[in-house]
Length: 306
Image (cartoon, rainbow, N blue to C red; front, side):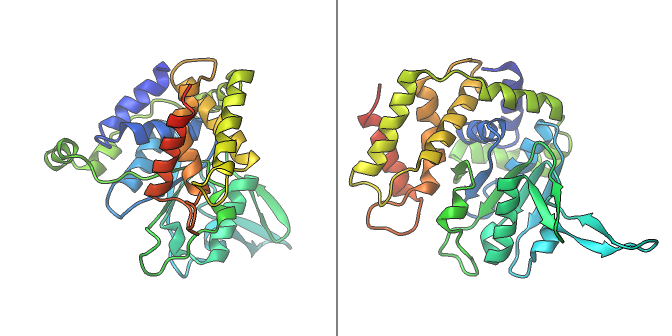
């Protein structure tokens, strides 16, 4: 495993006990330059993961609680008249950070959701006709409650597509939960967490990830996976060409995480469920994601195993 990223994962393991697979995927998502969506129940460690990831990578962290009365200006910022001259001065909102935790994004109205998702795509915000660039790196971790809870505004498919990966943490196993119960307070652990990387080094890692080699044979394998989601009876709609590009981007980051300069089938297999689950709906269903989609993706990987 890449030495620097291995140290970060080992440190995160001490905070989020028993979630090694999810931590690896979250680190891959950041190194790939994407954004992460976490759908799960309150209290399973979503905020802890976001905060620990930011501190370990040495990045600035901001948390915004999304509510039904949150306005786009509350998130992006606004312009105020100058006191000593004509014109306006821009007051940046909390989106101007390196790691933004958009907590319970599906509790905010669609207009506010769209404002954030546009910023994620464009890496800038426009206020009063002027564009303002967001910091680099800019990494959004959005959490959302299950759709059957009250007061939620589900993200439409076009907005879900802005997220490179989607994860669910789930309940800890018995050993991990016992370690949590008998261990140190997580907030105190987070306060003492040292940075293992800095912004400049992370940007170099992101550039390295883009240069990881993908062979023609591996591209053929990815095409077969994409076609299988489109042609078979398992899914209502298959993965788009853009999803295929994002799948390769995530696979490259996974290869770099494991200290390789080439992408292998196991990299694609490791990231496919997280890249695809929020982009697919099971046949006969309208809502994307869910355990059935994950199970069918695993079956697909077994059928097309190399």
